[in-house]
Length: 139
Image 1: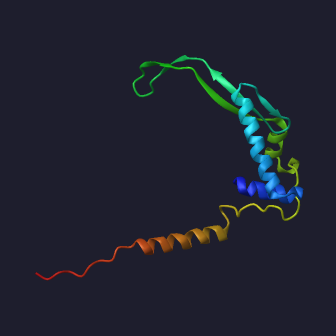
Image 2: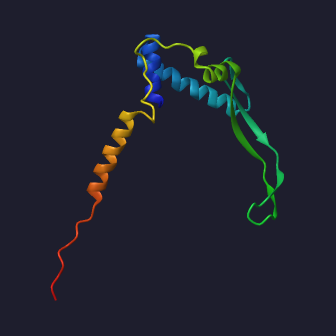
Image 3: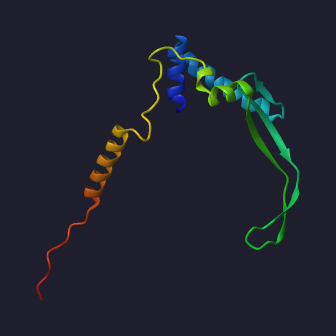
């Protein structure tokens, strides 16, 4: 699911205007990014924790040569899923239910309709790329 699809689903589920949902989502990501960039963690209970992690310089090894190298200090973003989110993902029965008809998952990769569509497009692309042989020249 991409951002546009997320906005549509949230708007439909909450019976809200898509422009309002899009503006809220943009504002939410801007605020989380700004606060975490300053070094403060953001904790959305039951969902995720966003934090900036500073890693100190350390000694390491070049895997190709085994030569010791110095790894410089760095800063990373860490997003940790929290208990409520993890439980909902691991057992879908605990996940919140969406309103009927709001979102339907894409067909499974192993379904017959998906496999037939892949075969059809593969066959078409192969025939388009086939090179025609020129008639043999007489000497």
